[in-house]
Image (tube, rainbow, N blue to C red):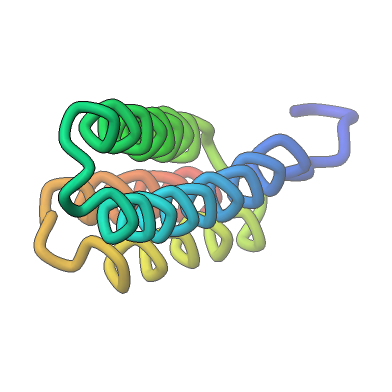
Length: 118
């Protein structure tokens, strides 16, 4: 990085994207629950609505997972970038607390970044 100012613009954008993606999951799950309640006893028509809502939840989860992989795979160039990665890790743990493997991926990435920066 000789002659260049290190910044984490891309990493910070990915962290914001992860938060937006997680918000989309929350909204999709909330919508699914509303559809499920509204479709109770609707038969086939209700089943189609539920399937569509479930597909939106699945798509939102896939976006979260893809963004998470991008955050983990994007090296931090500053301690601020490390803090952003750890912030996403904490938020991930708040939502998906039982998925230790993913939490460890964030921690490994952040620790690798700290080692590289020091």
